[in-house]
Length: 487
Image (cartoon, rainbow, N blue to C red; front, side, top):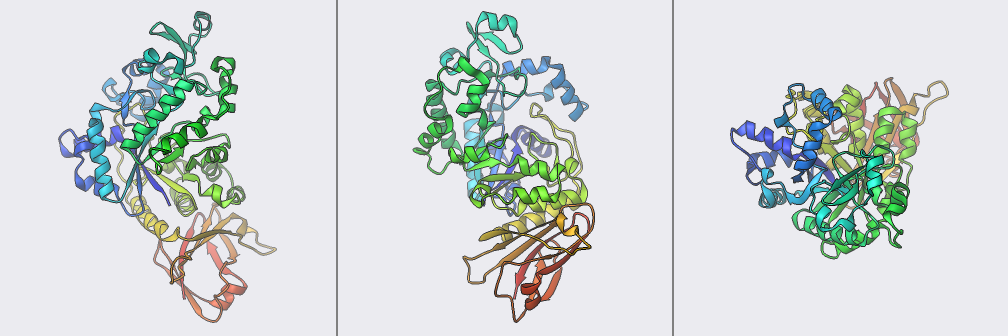
């Protein structure tokens, strides 16, 4: 199952340059660093922000006091030299020369391939930078406005190259000041999107599509109305993705997705979609809510991306502190679907730098957190094999603490050894006790040893008890078991 490791490419290369005392680009990252990236349990690396950033977008960002305040909050000693502009304000889909250019990305991909890892990069389908070539070469690819629009709503429109264009937006927020809106209904845009994604597929093994749901016909029509023109017969992604896959049949498509549109986007061709709902349930709701979320159809769950943080979310060490974070990490790591880890998460970083920045504050690594994640990645790689099944812990009339427990099993049916794993998570701040019914009907008649893959602790239990009553568990607040069961 796909396990993605997201790296902020610009910040990472800057820190490597300081570490080695020389400029480091994608083309000359030392092999020992790629070895560090290729840790056990990771199979895909997302190099976030490799394309040319926009000088025009940077100038806009430097004038935006709200943005500058966010830069100071994350990096108190920030200077203008630390502000590089947004990687989602794309000037051109060419690897930025400062990062090593196309040759550098090709070298990085070769290093990853040598270590058995795949590479994914970004695509921003909804908008481009105000100095992107399409504004002058392909104006019909964009949402256009009138002089009256510009006069009445200067925050929503801009004039450039003799045209007036709408600024990029989603329907629930004010327009983004540094980008220009593409027109999802434009035949020309669909054609150049296909060409661009084929080019991306020449350079990477997968693509993470920013705010993918904004291009869906019904969403786009509600956002832009008559300005977009007639609604096409084909939705955007079912038109684009199959044509890209004619050239790159195995290109991995990952959607940043919200608003409960994950299933629709899976049906429209995406391999995986963000599971923001799980993140929010773990952060703000109780175990019953998480358990209900996991009752969804298994094929749908296999198409989700589970995460605790990424470049858009607060750091997990802040949202899920201490033992709670470890419980949440075990949860996302051992569920079906893809898993997304964010560079710095394993070291317990707490500051999320805005994507505009080329530098972040120094934070000492939290060694216990680093060791926990090392063990978790290895354990999750062993656990997530075969058939997954959610289990329902049971309690007693005078003790309903079982309601705080999450539990599931993995049964590897593809091996002669019949490897079995059980995950139990106390998703609460109080102790819990329960019986966990096990899905295996051949336990009777012998002793079974369970080994916790995170701690090494072993538990010997009679098979008859496990088959009849289930496994008795007692877990303190936010504690977990990741158990391997052998006869």
